[in-house]
Amino acid sequence: MTRQFRDGRLIIASHNAGKVAEIAALLAPLDIAVQSAGDLGLPEPVEDGATFTENAILKARSAALGSKLPALADDSGLAVAALDGAPGIYSARWAETADGRDFATAMLRVHEKLGDNADRSAHFICVLTLAWPDGHVECFEGKVAGEIVWPPRGGRGFGYDPIFSPRGDKRTFGEIDPEEKHAISHRAVAFHKMLDACFDKYSDSDDG
Figure 1: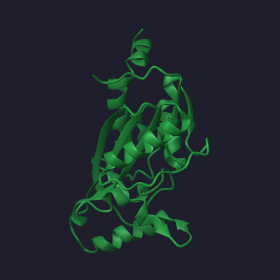
Figure 2 (figure 1 turned 45 degrees about the vertical axis):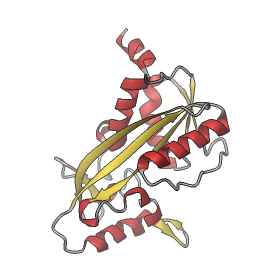
Figure 3 (figure 1 turned 180 degrees about the vertical axis):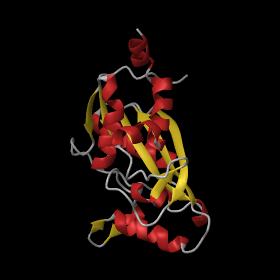
Figure 4 (figure 1 turned 90 degrees about the vertical axis):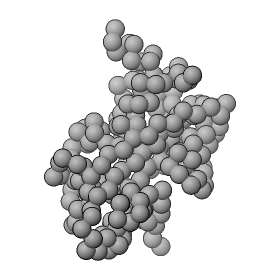
């Protein structure tokens, strides 16, 4: 049976400011006190899992154990069909440079590897893992399909957003208003699955 979230506090297991802001915005209607792993000075665990789910579990459990509170972790990335699903779980690593993480470099790398390939299809994947200090976890996956565009467009969002156009929309995630993106993103799909499964307390209060 899926475990229900009954606490008033939740740790977002991330040091990525853009990701923390997006998850916090999704959580805002639930009236839960939210802090990030970065706010608490918790260490970033080594993400050596072979899948998005394994990495999300690693991060969520690390933050839950370190804070003694339930923690929510996200592992997400861009999967490009013509690149056999790359960068996939290595999406952040593709942005690593000698001067730190730079997603302009990562986006250029995707563009160069695609070359003249006519297949521009891609999708964003997100796995959200909710973990408790006793080690119990619940995992939820969300996907959104689209295509790679070039050059990058839009200064909103973060990561690969400026080169990803969701199916049925000519705009990139970098051009879409954040509130609109929150309603359709891979993270939103996973979040609503989690909400339906683990947050009936909050759903009931909304219905009442």
